[in-house]
Image 1 (spheres, rainbow, N blue to C red):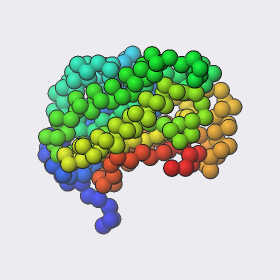
Image 2: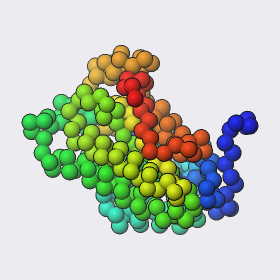
Image 3: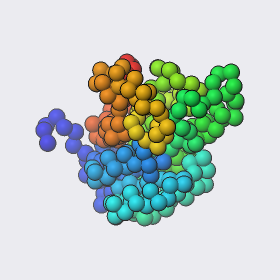
Length: 275
């Protein structure tokens, strides 16, 4: 380790970092919502590879979540909860703390409720209903709010917390009619920035990682191959971002190297969208 590398303070034996410290990834207990498949599973695996303990949240993918947990016995726990249900989220948080003997202090808001990335199947401007918009707000905004608030008391007690939410590059490059999804994620970005200011004095950072279309997740499985080819041709890297590449950026925001970063939205799409 070089002299310029931030050195995490040693936390108590229970695994809670001392107040104001920058915890190593291996010291963290991480909740990944929607963690059983696709991007969520890639994020879980990235944290587990760094030695973290991970709560793999799922709503309906029990078998996939348990299979992933079984790959990392002792350090991964699969727990069900619909993030839209506050009581279910609170139960998940308390069950995880009891299981690991220490509370969750890092949360990744990844859960995506009932959405498929296929522009041909989405409602266009002249036909989209408010109910469609509301459905995505329930998952992306209410769900994230439930998770953050349920984990917040433990973060405040520890004097440290990491909140990372998954956004989209469609804020800057709205080329497909994902009106409900994009509006909900834009609201989540606003919440990211306002919560960063509100929670910063408690040692809690709040950031967002925004990808483009990923190749491939369950949500993007219906995307035609020519769409992927067109995106790749428009990026400086001439490739479509993978779930694993986006997961790397999530690790950065949770790591000691991001201890001075909050309220930010990092775009990870191979350079397709510029800032």
